[in-house]
Length: 96
Length: 299
Image 1: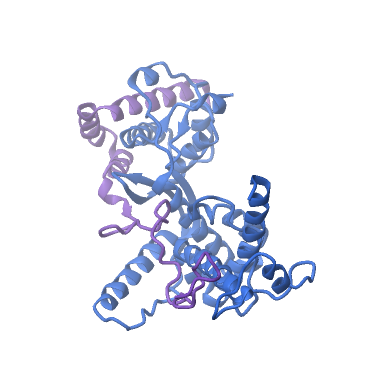
Image 2: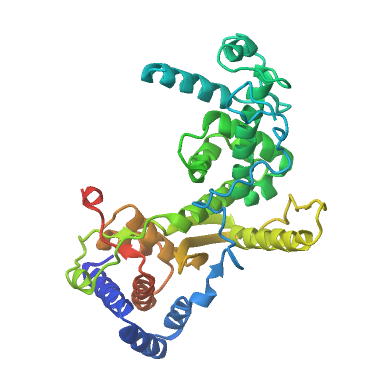
C-alpha cells in the first residue's frame, strides 16, 4: 500500500471511529455516508443495524448454561442413583 | 485431625471421586497401578447398612462424571449434531480424559476443546473442518457471554491515534471463521431444542427427544464476530476485511498494521476501501469493540 493511500486509510479509520463514539455524530455520518459513498457505504451502513445480527439465544433466559451459569445443578438428570441409599450421609453409621 | 492429615484425606477422596469410570459407567475395580480400589476405599470410607464402602463412593464417582458429561453436552450441542451421538460420546470421553476439569467452574470445561480437536481430528470426522468450526463457535459463545468488558476507546484517545498506536479488541468479542454456515445451523438447532422442550414441559413423564443430527450447514466461507450486546449473545457476520481488521487488533497490532493486513489482498477498489474502512471503524466504535491494550499487552 502506498504511503499516501495508507495515510488516507488511516484518516478514514480515525474519522470513522470519531463518528462512532457519539450518537449525534453517528447519525449524521450514517446519513451522509449513505448518500455520498454509494454501494459500499450502503452495505456497511447495513452493518450498523443491530437487528441484522443473529440473536444467538432467543427468548427468556436462553443464555442459561451457556457459560457462567453453572450454578443450577441439572447434571444428574435421570441418573440420581443415590436417592434413598444413604450415599449422601457423611457418617457411615447414619440410617435413613 | 491435623491439617496435613486432612489434606491427605482430601487428596485421596478427590482422586477417588475423579477417577474415570469404566466404559459401562461404573466405578473401576482397579486403579492405574492395578491395585484394588475396594481395599483403598475401605481404608477411609465407612460402609452403612445398605451399601459397602465401594458402593458408597461409586455414587459420588458416577455423579461427578455424569455432571461433567451433561455440562459438556450442554455446551456443545452443535458439535454433537455434526459428529453424531456415538462419535460425540467417544470424543467427550477422550477429551475429558486428557483435559479433566481443573477449574472451580464448569464454565471452563471446554476451554481447550478446539485446540484438542485440531490435534485429534479423527474425533471430528467425517466433517472435520465443520465440526471444529462449530466447536469454535460454541466456545466463542461461552466467552462472549461472560468475558470481561473493558472501557472503550475515548474520543481523546482516538484523537491521539497514529498508525503505530496499538489497539485491542474487547475480550467479549470473539472471532470465528468457518467453511459453512455454522451460525445458522446452531441457531436452528437451539430453536428446535427449545420447541421440543416447550412441548415436553406440559407433559410430565414424556421423554424429550432431541435431534442429534442436524442437516448439514450450508457451505460457504463465513466470518463471524460473536459478541455480547445488552447481556445477550449475537453472531455477527463480517466481511473478510472487517474480520482481518479485528483479528489484527486481537493480536495487538497497531492501527497501521491492521489496515495493511486487512486490505492487502482485498478485491475492493481504493475508493471503496476508504468508504469501507471508515464505515467499519464507525461500527466498531459504535459497538464499543475497540479498547486500549493493557500495559502487559502493549509490551
